Length: 204
Image 1 (cartoon, rainbow, N blue to C red):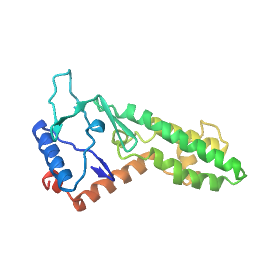
Image 2: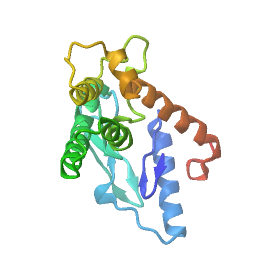
Image 3: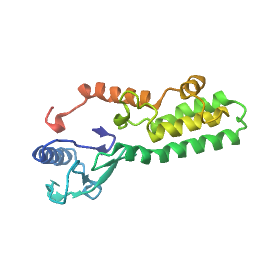
Image 4: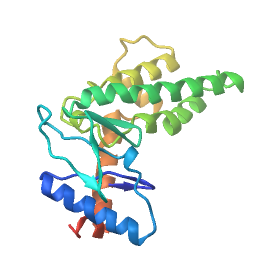
């Protein structure tokens, strides 16, 4: 997965990972680029103990960690996506705070439609990560910590009780459950893969 100068390589077999890392080293050398191995890390998902394979890029050994951050999202070795969702709450809350401050500064408190539009534009993306797949299951649309924050934010904006029906609040605000945004992001990512230059990974 390549985004600007951030790259994540995923494999099921250790041998395949080293092959991709070796190809990365060759690619970088041919393009006169340098792989910053001090910021490159290996996470062995669902692994137990310290007896894990060692990988290198151009002869530089990569350190293994229990978690890593990619595009603001934290991935844990245990694949605990609920914990990742809790971590994502920080930028979500920060975006909500900045919007509230902007609304007060520009005397927009009495214009809730403007407030909600700003929220949909700047707050929702902070919580709309592709990685929320554990919450894409039927019946779990409101079970994420981010969904709880989203609904609390909307109900507070409308000035209604927190016990108000979630669907009624969403319809009134013109918002969808975060599950919808996650699913749309996952579909966009999947659809973009066939058009991606995958020669680095051997053309798979």
